[in-house]
Length: 460
Ligand SMILES: Cc1ncc(COP(=O)(O)O)c(C=O)c1O
Image 1 (cartoon, rainbow, N blue to C red):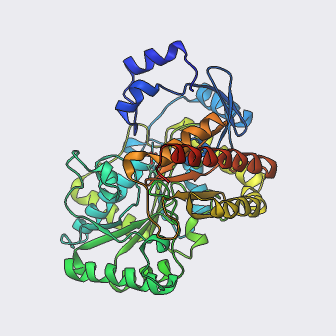
Image 2 (image 1 turned 120 degrees about the vertical axis):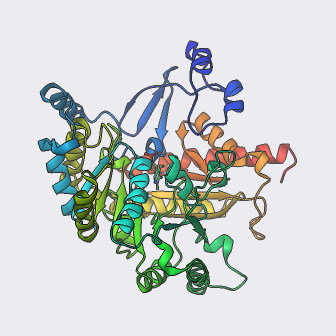
């Protein structure tokens, strides 16, 4: 049971929660988090939890990092705000743009700042439209995303997302967004079809889609290197190689959504490096500030930038931006975050502890409820199924993933059910081996309890 606090009634009366079952929330009430340290958060009753999802896949350095606190304090004291509109600037924004250019997995001409991953992906879409209009290809507007992809919840980003709950009754997706196959071999492959053959088949379906729509009507393809919110789905062997060959043939830009994968999560700085992707542009957010302050960003390639410059001759200004694009606080904290990642060699650390993570994850493949245990680096998913052999899911209304997550919470572990009944684990990057083991002990107990509950209710 969640602790009954006097926050509960106030919360239910005052807050409209994002991405929450509002009906269930009225009876379940909130989990009120009060403080955090390292990989742990503490609720209002003082109970400690391992933050098994790094908040929302974002708190790379964990909590209570005093260097980041001090950086934020100093920046707020020196310059709490100035903006970047109309050519105004400040040193933290300049230095951060330089740093992101230097660590970008592909050449980047410029960096544009936002406050979130959604805003960054909306910006990607708007720039793709604007760029193609200005360069005289006004038909080239459509964006191809993937079923079960997740790119955020603003109007364009939610449209790119390939999860129906983000569309239904929101009048989304907007026109011009197309969704191609979700690359999930375990679920989508035909009997006896290996990863490479499966990748060939679904990339042929992408090729067919492009030909049906008209290659000169497609501006860009967007993909997460590892799909996060759609269910922690890893690309099958040769998938991105084949996708890139098709895109190159038709002059279609590749936007890599690195919002979860960026900054070491998969064992390289970028998921693009892990999976051999050479994108035209990347979107980042979350771990760029280790979630101490909101920030998102995207890189702009040289050719696109030059066209935007030309457009200012026509329109006067590049009329896109947010009051807080490149907020000094966010820039200073991001710079310090990246400095710390480099100093403590976070990528090497992830590679060092990832084998423990992988071993414990793979061991759970034998659990009666786990259909597939998948992951890379420090991100993993456990897909819970009714019938392992038939790869048959539970009825969505049973909420098996949500139930497992609730048991995990009782066991002192916070995680999330994504893409239906997949329990996602994505701890702070600073987690050590003993803490990884404690996290998996917690999820194992939660899965055992979930199985017990399903048996008691007669569902397995
Ligand atoms: C891959 C990906 N892109 C974009 C977003 C949206 O980011 P934000 O919630 O900061 O708008 C998310 C959020 O989870 C994400 O996982």
